[in-house]
Length: 190
Image 1 (tube, one colour):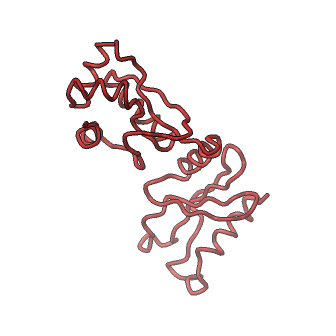
Image 2 (image 1 turned 90 degrees about the horizontal axis):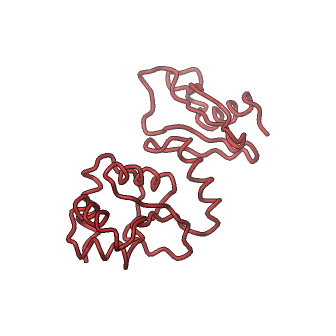
């Protein structure tokens, strides 16, 4: 286990090249806290001089057991990375899949799905009965998509599946409904 001081020292030893010490490019810890589970120190570090700030790094994770440091890219917060890692471990080799949560006999749901996905009635039936696994990906992203779909009145649920046959994989969160519409118009066709 690392103390806060030891965690700071370990990260600064990694990011501060000897030639940076005492210059405008020297890094300092801007923020540090222990994760909720106590397994990682979550840190943000950057150049002391604001004219030399480095872009593209959202933060650093120091494993509180091993001392290994992971760099989190700009599009993923350290907290998101930890959430995905924990969900991956819980999945135990299975895959998170967002699936249809209505039956083929629910005509209102079929109409709503057809309207929101911009697909034909026969495609709505197909993606309800034959191909009900819509998306696979991290649980965090699927929960986000599930919320977007629910706002449009389309019910879904998340399941852990051994051999997923999802229509498509989601690796980054769609920002707008138009992003979702683009996925539907491209992938949800038969």
